[in-house]
Length: 496
Image (cartoon, rainbow, N blue to C red):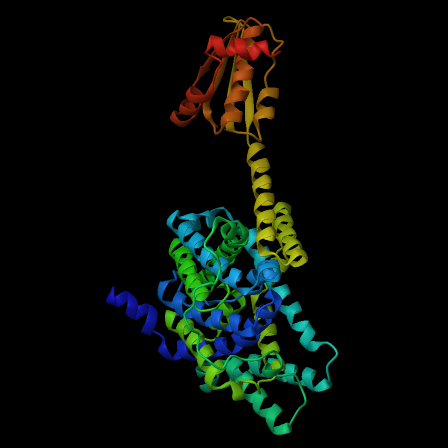
């Protein structure tokens, strides 16, 4: 236990501290913007980001991943806040946490195994596009100074790491933010700053219980929103964990992460914050800035609160152009450019899944819908592909007047019709043998197709024998098959 805590917290102190500071600076405008999207005071998003980041540092299942208030979650809160107010949002946040803890207890994090690489790539590419387009308002109808500052910021971010010694010691995004702020103040540039985003809180968050009646009516109001928030939050968190796993070549505990996200959201709700989840953009900033352990996540949350409460006068001076440069770097680093280069090499079905996921996510701004459509398409393509790997061979023995059908491959709902069509029911063979030695029956539809084949042959006067079933196939056929049950066969034939 001690060795694990030491490895996750103190094995990379300098890198984690510096990366945490960079993330904290990048979190501020986003937390304020997400609060505005949700229709609440900026301090609700800032308090949420502080609480979630600090709590998840202790209870999360993925060291080095940043969780805070997010745009995907904020979009789901708009109607609730508009119709019922902030107190109901806090209640929904608490319920969201409870539902996520239950999901972790039920080990629903394992469902990520069913999300294909094409869906993950599409999700990542869509998020990169959304991150980039979210910066466009800051680059529209502005003076040339903003473009110059943004370009200079990008130059610092990409060129600073090439400097000997110091280039590797200090994260370039942090140098970008500090240097661009100094330039803007010294030159007195009239450009948009963090202070223009909204009023920053000047007090620490305090414990509070949502002022809502504890009735079934309240539950009926908040539950639909909480269920949506829980699903989207876990989905984005699991996706982010997968990406950080790849970036750091480490593994994460997804079920522990589900519970951790739930505990963090309960903490946010009890301190006046809105629900949040893992953030891909900020997590990538953290990893690329050298953050690897839980300390980086803790520093990000703690330093965020220190800055907005005690250093707000300095914080307000940071030009948005510097933060836009950081977020453009994130969008460029997030996008999977290899997925574009490899389009000609990948199967058409994989490309369709990836591109469809991107289009749906970008069009709806809803990550859950995009991933659901992607998973659905991937499942259909997979079922169609596996269904084609089923064949039925036959041979005829004239001396015994026996036709033997040898079934090879997987028989399930997608290949059931093909299975039935492979048999010649009009052939006047006295005996029919269906050899399943090289086949596997997966579901009720497959068993039903076998029933139909056997019954049709028997109606034509043939004696049918089914042989070679493996243990799993025999189990499902014995449980759901009716071709050897005269009463059930009569019922089945009675329907014709």
